[in-house]
Structures are given as C-alpha cells and as structure tokens.
Length: 284
Image 1: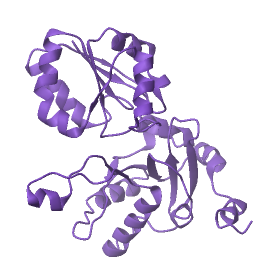
Image 2: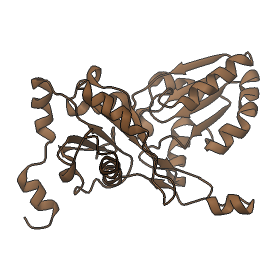
Image 3: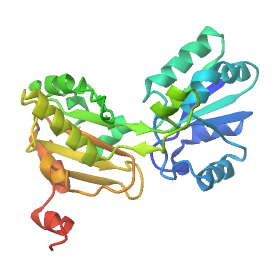
Image 4: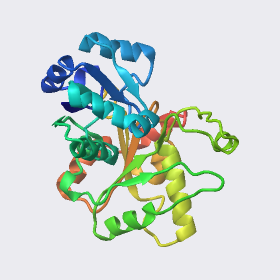
C-alpha cells in the first residue's frame, strides 16, 4: 500500500490522527521537500522531531528523487506499506497526482489521507473561498527570463470580480545554469519568494503590459507562515503591502476582486492602519 498523507501547514503536530496511525504502520516513510515546507524547514532538528513523533526514520524526498526514483518507491509500496508525506494536502501540487497515476498503472494500491492546505487556509482573511478564480504561480524573474503568463489569468479573474490566489516560487535543490552547462550539477541556495518581490514583479508586468489588470492601489492580502502560531495576515493596497516586512517563509498573496459587505467587514481586521504604516517606517 502507498499512503499519501497530508501534513497540514504548521508543524509536525498538524498531521491528522488517521495520518499518524498510517505512518506508524508503514515500513518506510518519505517526506516530500520541494513544493512546500513545514515551519521547521529542512533542518536536522526538524527531522528528528518528525522521527520522534513517528517512531521511525524519515527519508527526505527531493524533486530529483521523486522524478528519478519514483519507480523504486512504488516497487517498495507493491510489497510493503510506504508513506509519502506531503506538506499541506496531497493534491495541492500536480506532482502528486502523477505519483498516484503511476502507482495505479503498476497495480499498487493507494490510500490518500487529506489535510489543510493553502488553498483553504487563505479563508482566514474573510474572503469567501467560492469567490476565487483561477490560482496562479509567480516565478522568480531572472535577467533573461521574465515570464508573464499569469497576467492574463489575473486579468480574467478581475473582469469577473473574482479573487486571485498567487502562489509564490520556491526553489529548493535547483541546479544552477552554469553547472548544467558544465555537465556537473551544483545546486543553488534555497530561495523562497517574498510577498514584496512578488508585488514588484507584478507591477513590472503591469507597467510592461499596460492593460490595467491591477495597479499599485489594488487591494491585496499578504499571508506569511499560514497555519503556524506566528502566521501573519495583512491587507491593503499593493503599494503599502510592498513596504511590510512579512518575515520568514512561506508567503503567498491574494489579489482582491469584487467584495461582499461581509467580506469587507472581516477584511477590515487585517487592513493596514495609518499607525501601522508609520511604525513600519520607524517613525512612530
């Protein structure tokens, strides 16, 4: 049996009871470490915390392992119980749908245990989940690669009055272009896009496209470390959100569409006030 188990968003305690029971009866436990991360990141202390809770070793499964050794993992699951742990919900990333398809094609039985994900946790700000349009991903720009395909999706959502969840780039164990050219992989330092970088890139694309999908006065909500004890939620115009220090990753951003009075009432609790802005600038 292959168990694909959601871990939730905060720390090791967010696994469900069903998920924990499944992990404890598995012979091998893999934890996926490239589409998201728990609050303790990828530190050795973090993994020892997981291993202490589960009572068995945990194997870090980076993108390379899953893409190149998935067949070995599935072969193990054909003859024993194997757990594949995913931060958030198992189907928050299409990568894991592919794993299920491959398992079923090999005749491996699959059991999925769900958990909270960013897709529903953003509801904390009061924007109603059924009023969201298509989710977009914002990648890191480089000197030679500045993709803007997300722009049309945001524009469509805005025309329909829908909110847009922007998932921000995570680069973990990514080979550098220079090393690939040399034929020997060397990996870049892990990078996690901040809300500030995302807004800078969004405004750059708007300036280039000039189609008024949004502007620096468009209301947004920035989220940091959703599901953790120190989660941060701040609402306001892009130009003001840009000045906020959201701290450690992970971050995500919502571009607000047309709002219902009930949404506005809830959103007001998270909206930047004048005194907050002055404090951020060190002039309070």
